[in-house]
Length: 88
View 1: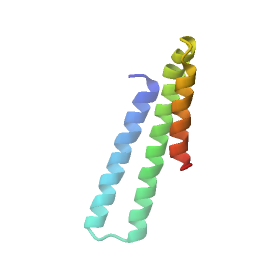
View 2 (view 1 turned 90 degrees about the vertical axis):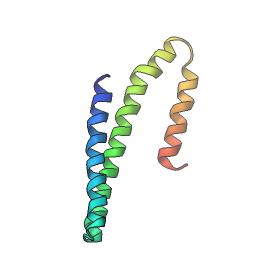
View 3 (view 1 turned 120 degrees about the horizontal axis):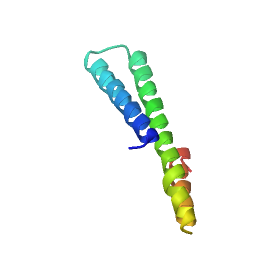
View 4 (view 1 turned 45 degrees about the vertical axis):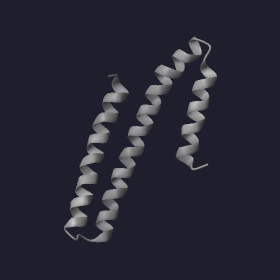
């Protein structure tokens, strides 16, 4: 596991804790705005983890693909991911 992947795992575990906390908050009947803020925080961490994974992909997989003249396939993958992220 490389540096980006390790950071992503830590970030995802933190997000998991926040998601579990949000579930508990709902079950306890906590204030809706507090629950929403917890969900927003977890969502931000998921986005951060995704960026870490994409960085790792570009620095390793995409770089290697270009070295073997298969870069266009990786560009298509990145464009597909970006379209999912942006909703377009």
